Length: 218
Image (cartoon, rainbow, N blue to C red; front, side):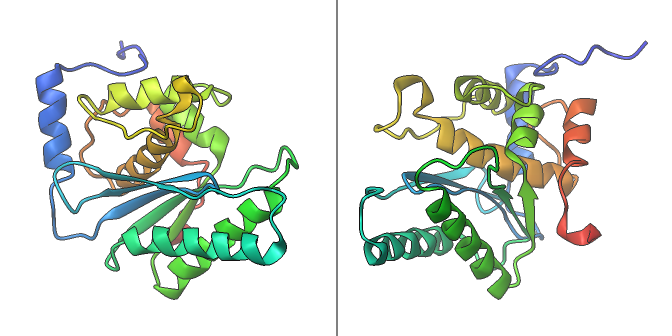
């Protein structure tokens, strides 16, 4: 009889932490980047350059009422700050896909930022995988419509002892969401590359990855 598909798998805190250190120590392959683009607070995680994840938050204030040239400069500035964090020998970048379910203020600007980041990665010949938002949530929580606090809790359990940076301008229970999403995206990339993971890889994790178009199977 197969083991039940529990949310966080099995293993002691010590063994999971040891697995995390081994999995993400510098190796002969390049690092993996997870990118959660946002006009307010983007999350960027780099795995593989140090034993522990390198998680960054990039905040940039602005208003939907700003004139076009101000918005354009802001978007380009965010793109540049994100790309400054991406190692040029990155093996794979996993970026969260755009949400097509609504047309809220700022949707066009967020799409513009998304395309600028992808164009920059393409220019550097860094392979890109696009992870739909529902796939990220399904992978982390087994629920494609999970709320941000649920994703945060799931990622903290999958990465024992991780200290996620917070966005102080977000709602109190969502302040770690950008960091959690970017770490999830980078971890998904490492799982795709068949690296040892700091959590028990379940069938739902494997199934979620089949919903992503990977650069090596186009």
